[in-house]
Length: 396
Image 1 (cartoon, rainbow, N blue to C red):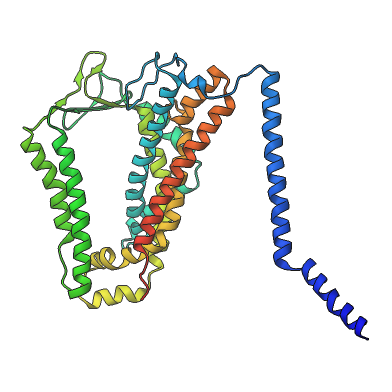
Image 2 (image 1 turned 60 degrees about the horizontal axis):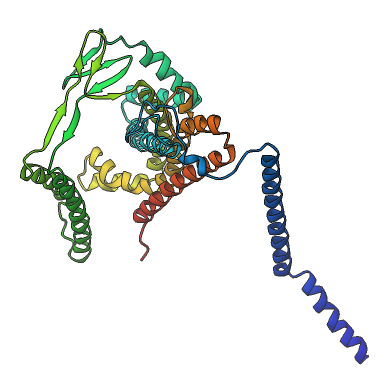
């Protein structure tokens, strides 16, 4: 009997060890990791073998080679004698320019349309609805081609340019506007802007602490606006107003001088902004509808107008619902900028494609694509997650 009892005590222990969920989960994870490592090793080994068979060298040394091609739109100095690496930097900066300006424009349009969809005015509500349903159901590439070939390409030539205020011109070659030229001492303006932003942040924190302690409010917005605008203006005056404008000059067959915003950039910016704004509008509408109606009624009982209730009560609470899906739309806009290759705008993908065709370094160029887009997306997510944490409710 004693031997039988010992055997019965041992068997359940062995069974519990074999069927322990923790042991089983660790074993499964180890097998998955092993298979993943073996898969990556097989891909890398097979790739290197195929490259050796094709006599293709690997590495990023090609970035120091002469590019031999020009880039029309650029934010930094570049010529065909520049290196492939500098060409990629030009493409990255163009991508960032489209992404940042597109996010700003799409956010403004999206919020206005989203609020318009909830308007009591029948006409505004229907116009906003039609806008959302049209742009949300069209592929972004078609929207880009619409602006490029259906709108901007139909503008008049240089002779028939539309004359706009501030000596600006609009024609089929793009938008020409005065280009600011900063002189000596302009750094004081930048210093004033940095100091103004820093002081505004300090004032906002102090005002929040003061209101929490005493209940007294402080005009944070007006004070911050005065600091951010006033200090740069003061630096501008103290430095002797070192600013002139290079105005575009209209000739018989061409426009010279000024700043030329080319139609490729304009069409890409407008297309991505209007397309993404349709999704942002629905996110904003859902966020506003997610706020309890009692909040609006409470604001009205305090004497706030409908506009004040929306701006001071509803939207701040709706932002906690809006921000997470809004981040996804920002990421989509950044990645959709790669469609610029369809109209010849030299973003990262277009410039990298040209380099790939000239050098044959497909793997290296694709790796650069992945690293750059991943870095931009992670940075965008980091900023939006920080903003989301600032907007979150503080539980007591």
